Image 1 (spheres, rainbow, N blue to C red):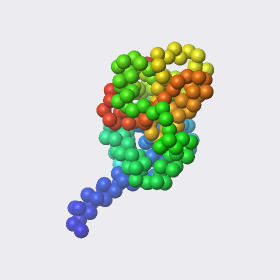
Image 2 (cartoon, helix red, strand yellow):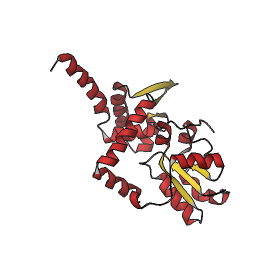
Image 3 (cartoon, one colour):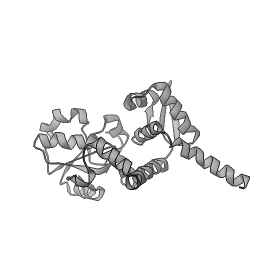
Image 4 (tube, rainbow, N blue to C red):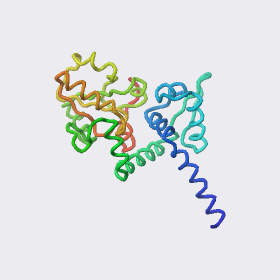
Length: 221
C-alpha cells in the first residue's frame, strides 16, 4: 500500500479508536448535552476522576473534544455539532443493524420499542408547540436544560417530577423528553405521570437527535 494512503487510514483510525471504548461513548453521550468538568462527568457517569481524565485525553487527541479554562477548572465539550452527528449516526446504525444493541436497549429501557405506545415524533412535537396543544417538559438535570433545550419546554428534572405533578396545568397531554433514544429518564417520567392520572407521552428520541437534525435550540432559563 502507498505510504501516504496508509498514513491517511492510520489517522482516520485514531478517530475510530476514540469511539471504540464503551466508557468514552458514555462520556460523549453526556457531552452531547453540554459542557462539563471532569468532576461533573465522573459523578454523572459513575467513573473515577482519573479514568475520566484518561478517556478525555484520548478524545482530545482525536480532536473530538475541546476545552475552556475557568479559573482552575477545565470544562470539556464536543468539538462541534459534527461530532454529535457522528455519535448519533453510530447509535442509529447500532440499533438498526445489531440485534444485540436492540435487545440491550429494550432491557435498559424496560419497554419493548416495537410495542410501546404514546410516542411523539419530532414533527409532532413541533406542531404541538406551535399550536399550544401540549405541555412539554424537559426531565434532564437543570444544567443540561440550561445548556440547550427545546424552545417552549420547561425544566422539570425527573427527581422533582413526582412532587410537581399537581402543578402541571396541562392544556393537553404532557410530552416529556430527555437526552436521546438511549436515555431512560423520559420513560420513567411518563410512568410517573400516568400513575398520577396525567395523560403523558414521550418524544421518540431526545435532545441529541433534536439538535443533530437541525431543530431550533434555546439556551438558558
